[in-house]
Image 1 (cartoon, rainbow over the protein chains, first blue to last red):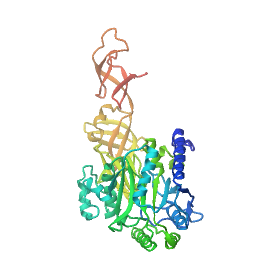
Image 2 (cartoon, chains in turn orange, red):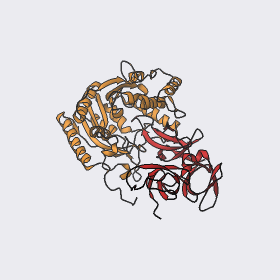
Image 3 (cartoon, rainbow over the protein chains, first blue to last red):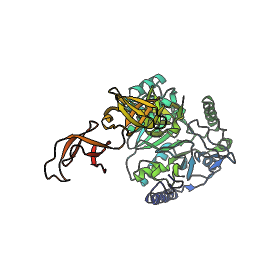
Image 4 (cartoon, rainbow over the protein chains, first blue to last red):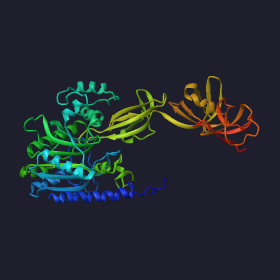
Amino acid sequence: MTAGADWRPGASIQALRQRAEWRAQLRQFFDQRGVIEVDTPLLAATGVTDPAIECLQESVSGYWLQSSPEYAMKRLIAAGLGDCYQMTPAFRAGEQGRWHNPEFTLLEWYRLGYSADDLMNELGQLTDALLGPAPIRCRTYQAAFRMAGLPDPLLASTDALISAARTMPAACPLPSGMAHRALLDWLFSQVVAPQLPARCFVTHYPADQAVLARLDPDDPRLAERFELFIDGVEMANGFRELTDAAALRERFEADQAVRRACGQSVMAIDERLLAAMDAGLPDCAGVAVGLDRLFARAAGVESIAEVIAFPWARA
Amino acid sequence: MATYSTNQFKSGLKLLLDGEPYSIVENEFVKPGKGQAFNRVKVRNLKTGKVIDRTFKSGESVEAADVMETEMQYLYNDGEFYYFMAPETFEQHAAPDAAVGENGKWLKEQDTCNVTLYNGEPLSVEPPPHVTLAVTQTDPGMKGDTSSGGSKPATLETGAVVQVPLFIQEGEVLKVDTRTGEYVSRAKD
């Protein structure tokens, strides 16, 4: 192929016009609810410590392209801004496929005083507005495993997970050297997710998958984290936010230890976020929606490349 | 030992899995937002043709299969092996029946074929998409037959049997599509 021959958009003009309409519709959704739009930096001094996310670094400044606007938005909320949302590009190195693009669009919003249930309810309204109304089912992470015929993910030993993985009807050989957490992720993506109802919240993730969610005060084995799946594809991830800076520092340090043990580069901790939380992050809930995926579902297409003007290979 | 990282995966890439050569048919990147990334692939066993599913942790290295697709000239069959020659080096390779399989019936001496080598040995042989072969046996067509309607079997010089129009006579040279096994036309000259 001659250089430049792929100059045209990957998405159809019709899909791109539709995308603009959906974005306008989303702005209206938040306008009507008094949630204000914000902009936060795409480049910042630190990225995330999360072992499962590789940030991209800008080579001249050494700053990091943000994998999510979460930390900056929490600093705004700690400073007193209140309910806010943004639609922003986000970046994750090496994530490329049917449902991934290294540069993608996140819709993220925060609601003060909301519980996880309140925010799931609002996300349901947003989903109905974009995709047309349909019931959304709700399953705990634990129940989703059990209903797929798998052992209890909170109790099962690593060996029990391995033997369960081997007896699955659609079983294909497990990758070698799978740690406990990787096994859970493998079982979830290979076995659990394909069996979820068409629209389904998964709630109450195990505490070691809390990320930035608060632990359930009634059962600290669980985190107040939820995800939305549509047709088995992960669409959104939300938290009743952890507001305890000391607890978050411990999680960041644990992330760094994991990265060090796996020979991954270790990201510095975002001290400004921790200082903001120390000063006081109001009780709130927040959620990030993979907007390209939601648009792909709304358009009825099977890859995000069909709703992105210039996906990675044409960017 | 050559290896590939999962981020190099694409269809057609040749991998060595459990000691067998495979070709990637389909590669899908699967990753929970907050969890371990995997590559879920469909791979075809190059010896048996069987397609299986595998998953790899993203970033994992997988051994490459020493598989090479080359063009070679078909020389002859000695009853046990089919012999091919690399056009530049004149190096000869003997392909067993298992590697040639059904495609043997299209092989005509001097024709250029696609030979897949695994560790230097022929693993599979693909004939050219079109071959020109002479008819060695076919029943005479009925008088007055024109170019439309009806067909009959004809045996070609390589032993292949194809359906041909009724007007084709023994000794004629035909163009045949080896992918569908169908008659295309009379050869031009």
